[in-house]
Length: 305
Image (tube, rainbow, N blue to C red; front, top):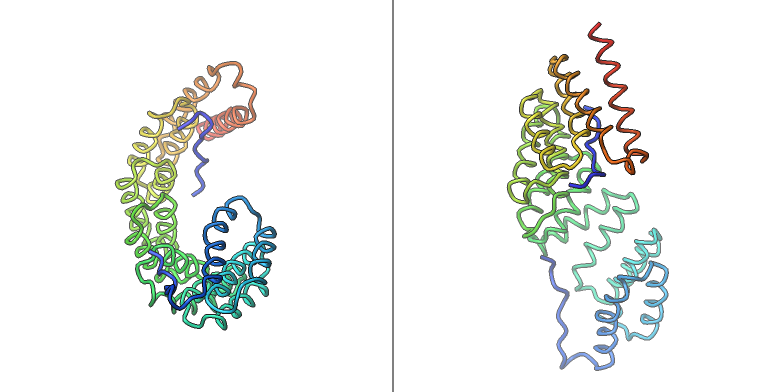
């Protein structure tokens, strides 16, 4: 964790495309498809959506009808999606279906386009249909989970997140965070279950600060103040700047009705904040931290009088 990191104030496997058999595919078609796959993938890393669309326009104009055209149209549909040109994106998917009706991956792409366009119910129909072709794809489960969450279908969302975690060999913290959030959205009775997901993420990935901060929020919501203080201590022990974590500790102590201890902790936070090197004392972040400490200290003292 770096000095600039401060705790917030308390507020509360993809299915392969249909294979091409060289004995039945013209050499010209294979060359065009190779251009799209190998040159196109490298170019997409640096191209914006408009540039990708122009490049694909040229390739599509030169491609023979069939599998190669469907592949290129699918790529252009994704570029239109990124440019938020929903009508053009759907039109390319429909043309791709006509060119290659056996391409099941078009269901997933059309589902993603419709969801991005705000037509989530329609998009889910396509994603759920594609799921029968690729049930072990973690990214597909993640698309489903996010769509269900956006519609507040929390039980399906939490199940889909569980499947995404099951099939993802190397999930990042955000996947645990999203599943925890989906579980918590089901109501106060699910806060412990949401915390358990974060704990599983910490056990699997190590002490990621995003997971620990969210876990801290749940400990506070569950009024488990000792556990919350333990998490703050663990975070503070790895920080070079202690003042932000002392501020958080004081807030928790105040919530736990330990006002004298909270005030002493704020005094320590103020001393720590004013002892940092001079070149850092003028930064906006440092000024904000000092203001937060002084404001909270004044409030706590007023409440104690």
